[in-house]
Amino acid sequence: MTPDDTPAPRDPAEQARLHLALTELWEQRLSFNQLLGLKVDSLDPDHPRLRLDMRPELVGHFLYGRLHGGVISAALDAAAGFALTLAIARKHPHEPTAQILQRFSRVGTIDLRVDYLRPGLGAHFIASAEVTRLGGRVASSLMRMHNHDGLLIATGAAAYVVS
Image: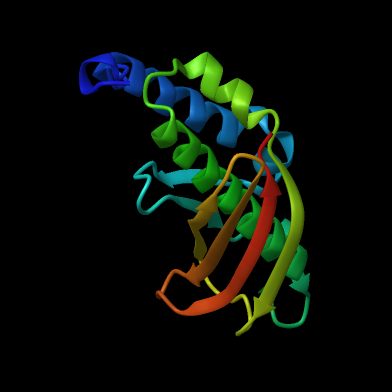
């Protein structure tokens, strides 16, 4: 393939459609994300982030009002899936939104590890992820969750099937 044969990158209108579709997917169509209240905070493929506001339904320890560890784990997993979808879109810049969403439909968590570093205290939390490998069949990611003060409360690592 010569440089002239390289597919054109996604045009700005299609990129806007992709961002809108991914925001809708993460915030509204993925029911568990909706239940958790996850919101897209950044669509930057180099720094993707999801935001989670603290609510009484998410408390794991009633005496201290800490965020439940399962919520932390789920938010980190979602952040990695979000980062992975943005990485897939970047890897296939010529594909339309519908095809990127189809690729996402084949993504599934293989392994997830979470390290809880501090109590989940805060008004809101930011879950971010970095894709460390995007292969043809398997991808891996490193994740972090910070509270509203920027304090690191948990980290994670995960592997995903992507085909």
